[in-house]
Amino acid sequence: MRFTKMHGAGNDYVYVDLFDETVADAPSLARTVSDRNKGIGGDGLILLAPSNTADVRMEMYNADGSRAQMCGNGVRCLARLARDHGRVSSDHMRVETDAGIKEVELLDGAARVGMGQPALEPAALPVRLDGARIVNHEITVLDRTFHMTCVSMGNPHAVIYVESVADFDVETYGRAIESNAALFPERTNVEFVEVISPGRVKQRTWERGSGETLACGTGACAVCVAGVLTGTTERVLANDLLGGELLLEWPDDNASVIMTGPVATVFTGVLEGER
Image (cartoon, rainbow, N blue to C red; front, side):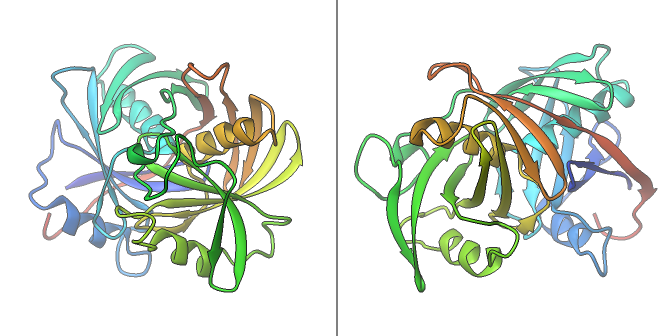
């Protein structure tokens, strides 16, 4: 089975083109290829597939084999793969995802994506809390108290501001929040954010089903939205992640969040054995 390893700002996935290949058990394959010691290594598996409603379709699986609705870095890379493989003939395309159809524009070494409007109602995430929006909600995790803002960008995110992300224990607190079934029945992604200025932040992400990743595109969009809702940052935001920079814009409360970020092919290869 031929595959392509790609990353967007360090958020790396193994991509398989279903126009040519067949995958019988995607969750099992995701676990196999994502293993950084015994497999190819990556944050998960993304499948490029035909679509009846858009130019192509993206199917995404986390490193633990669980299905994910959306990945902002992943959809940029998938668009690049679709263009390189001749599945589309334009640098502008529509990609069907489990979180709806996304408009993608390929740029030189990057891509711009309309990520859609954020969903803020608790039932949309879902999160088991009352209210129209969950903004600066106080939450106690282990030995610490945080203020959490919840945003869905097709998948759930809990955004938490901290003084410094460099020395923050992302794994301990991220894992505890992700797996808090009393609050998040479908688990959640968690973004820990340090504000540098109203127009720039630093972000570290604990990704549902994958652990800490070098970048999270939907998470960066959620951080942009949370910054506006809490009055912490501006509607145009540069986000410094461990793997690179993403640029976000949320023009108004009823608008789609626009994300621009890098796209890179790392290598291609052939995987032998079970699919």
